[in-house]
Image (cartoon, rainbow, N blue to C red; front, top):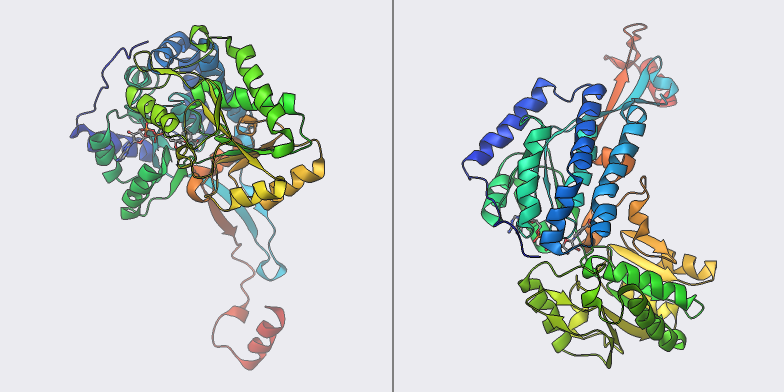
Length: 470
Ligand code: NAD
């Protein structure tokens, strides 16, 4: 498919007005009570149910996603997040009681989640619907008004969202700003109460700098090179299928895709063969003919990926290695005997190229990972629980799935987010609600009794008592 629209752009002078309207909406209390938040979450659910076909059409046009993948990873994922939130909203919004030490009694202490105000959500192009709306769910649940900034790299999705959001939300609750660097820069000059950014670390730094100006807290959902470690005792057939599925889903344009594989040399050959088999089983002898395989988002990314292949630094192309710029197709590619200094090992690949590097054992894999920036995800395959535990406890990553890949991000109450270079903060489920709330500490004291003990003058008797009890 070819992008159906050129990217729409919000007029720069409109941006401060859009944000101002959301601020006024927040202060007028549009989302103050829990019931009004429910109404808005249901409206979002309705948007997804009623507009499913158009959303999927736009995703197909922009990223060539297989329809079923667009449905599961973007539509169903977001609806599940809404349903999970609606189910638990009463519990999450309730103040929680906290114990009061004897010396502060009588009195009662509670922790009260309160909304932050008006938040800004900036999304990238790879899951352009999910990554814009899944953060909106906790933002609304926590009582915030929000401006959404879809990616200019997916213009059909962007234009559709700009059209649809005003049909389901008032401009004082949820608004959309579209465009590229100029528009996002103007947007980031506005004052927000939270900025939630998903994308690359370079722009993450731009966002954090802009946020510092207003002392605005940020959540940065970034990427990185997420390793898959395959131990010598792993079930290689299953590991290969799961790694191939996770890697070639959305043609590798997934933030938690296994970026590269570190395999124990004893099972290297078996794994490489099993990966090639998995690719053929999934996508046929010519994946270009498959309806189940996505395309690269644009020519710039296509060129970037083909250059990585041309740069070498590996022994063999086990499968794939070819591309077609006109249709933005790159075959699912597995590279064997990859050197640590190969071009494919520099940055996050973010495409359908899977480098295989060999290690002597799991400890060498742990060292390899620990020598590099902290990844967003880490996967480890082994049939021994001790080995799994050893790898998980000796490495740092945003999240982990053992003996599978990607799936930890779909467990509703597991926080999803990075650490170090892969980001800060998290969301999904209750952790998402917490991200968009301030946990306000409230101590309620009765007016009586009112002992003179803590007031000056501090007589020696008072001092003795204070020293004894505090
Ligand atoms: P992108 O190019 O669409 O950029 C993301 C957003 O940043 C867009 O809305 C864009 O308009 C905005 N932007 C770009 N330049 C800007 C600038 N100079 N100032 C202000 N805003 C600017 O997407 P991308 O960054 O290429 O996304 C891919 C990256 O995102 C990968 O690194 C991937 O791993 C990461 N990612 C992370 C997650 C996660 O949940 N942690 C999910 C998906 C993608």
